[in-house]
Structure formats: C-alpha cells, structure tokens
Image 1: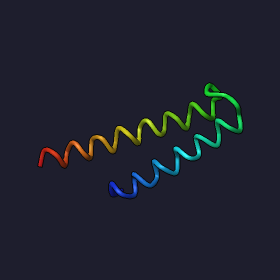
Image 2: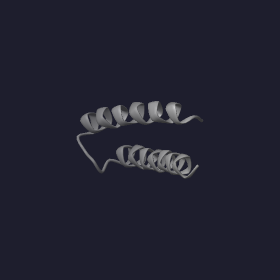
Image 3: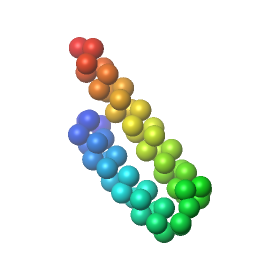
Image 4: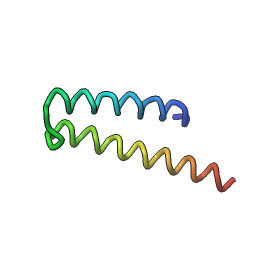
Length: 56
C-alpha cells in the first residue's frame, strides 16, 4: 500500500477510535484497545516507510 493510502487509513482509524471511545466511555474497553493497537502498528509502518525514503 502506498504511503498516501496508509495515511488516509490512519486518519480514518483515528476518527473511528474517537467515536468508539465516545460510544464506550472507556479507554480500556477491549474494542478500543484493539483499534488503538492497530493504529500503533500502522504508525510504525508509516515511520518505517518514511525512514526508508530519507535514507535513499
């Protein structure tokens, strides 16, 4: 997936996380934690792509 697509996915997922926290009223709800971890993995992927591009 291209960096632009990953960034769009990240923004969409962050919005979903915001809504999920509002819905559940909790930062430790299993669904919130799971989505947060997915976001973390995506951020790491984006950072790796950007670091790779900087090295070139």
